[in-house]
Amino acid sequence: MRNLASLSQLMVFARIAETGSLSAAARELNVTPSAVSKSLTQLEERLGILLIRRTTRSMMLTEGGRALMQHTATILDSLDEALNETSQFRSYPAGPLLLTSSVAFGCAQLSSILGRFIEASPQVQVNISLDDRCVDLAEENYDVALRITASTVWSHASRKLAPIHWVYCAAPGYLERHGRIESPDDLASHRCLVYPAMTLDGAWTFQRGNEVRHVKVEGCMISNSSLALLAATREQHGVACLPTYVVANNILSGDLEVVLPDYRSAITHTLYAMYFRSKYTNPTIRGFIDFIVDDLGSIPPWDAALRAHLPFLVDE
Image (cartoon, rainbow, N blue to C red; front, side):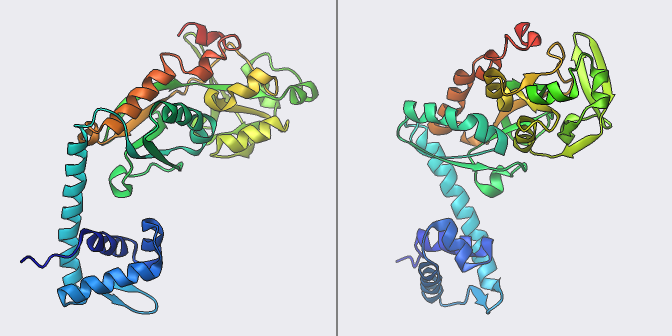
């Protein structure tokens, strides 16, 4: 008879080894620290060796623990691959779907998109993590990462979802106090709220047809959060360059006004769904990506709503 540890004990051991903490492993596994400790003890007793040397300050794999961890990682990877391959025989989306997205897109648009997806696929349980850093799909076990980027080089398979446009806007009250903006050059005398990735050598870019202009701006506020800059713009603190997916509702409601509507930013981005090519046969992953492509359409809803306000969108 084979003397095998249970799969659950191996999974618990792997999480302890990877997190370096009983409590951290317990949080990730959604169990109590005492349950994690008990599972590790039972596994060690079953194998007759110490796997992790514990002190009050640290946890360290023993030589036997390192050897088992190598095999366990292979086992869990093989199990994940087997489950993904087997799930292709199910023709409908079901089960867990682990997504990650930027904070701004997640708050501004993704919640609504997922609401519609869940209505269409009620057997799916979506877990969303909002994070502005570029996460590693392999290390953090996400199924799909929604990323807005200007790059076209990455190690994962991807599908283009939508172009991302940025526009210059301000609150009507700010413009009443500080003057209308008739030309990009007028911004030299205005308070500018700056998103660093939307500047080129310290300048905002303006494109109208084939014409591209650069205007140096001194930011009275600089932030890598478009949501923070949106709040500051609404509070009449200055002019900001913001993505249309964040600012569309504020423009439509009249809370914000497009500045220089004939111009777009010359810096462009694209929204992609990134995923493991080997997992695309999973109907839940494939179903979600197909859904979001259809849901956004050729012109995403936030841009379609702004076509009357942004002439350059009419030509797309």
